[in-house]
Length: 136
Image (cartoon, one colour):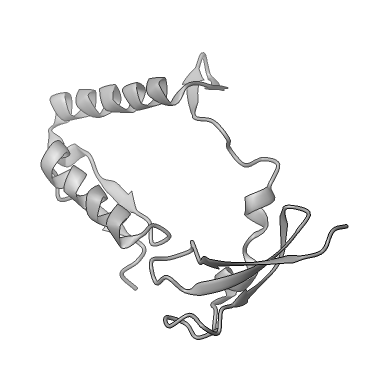
């Protein structure tokens, strides 16, 4: 095993922006602690920020988009996946109207990502049906 490197970063679990220090050994996160120099959290972390990092190295983690064909999920290109999503949204909107579409925004996203999500829903889809887990 190689020597551990310390890497400063921002937590990806919510939009708060807590500073973290990752202990990285052999290109794998082995420990996380709060960054005492970070103005947002001053070294404190929630349980997710401190301990929920194993997903980064999970073998079952998706690495490419999937589309269901003949009942099975198969890898596809991003271009085809985006086209598939757009055509399905168009079909639903055409048949049932824009209020038949809703979107759930994630607190793990940045404020900017959540802003563009609601902007997409309101201007492109024409629906105010947007919610998220970040209003607690």
